Image (cartoon, rainbow, N blue to C red; front, side, top):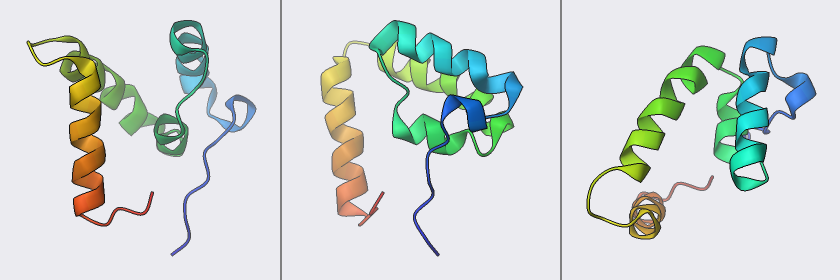
Length: 80
């Protein structure tokens, strides 16, 4: 199985292109993990609110949450 390729906005389903615009407005780019998830628009649409809630709520800073999921991916030998 190959590494999935991120979709650029023009390749994504029209229903998720607004997410690309929102990401560009918020952080200046569409992160690859979300662009790959755009292959499955229903999953992307449902994941964004979950991710936002996890990263913006609680007492742990977003920077540490980011490090935690990167370390988890490393421990589990997640190549992507």
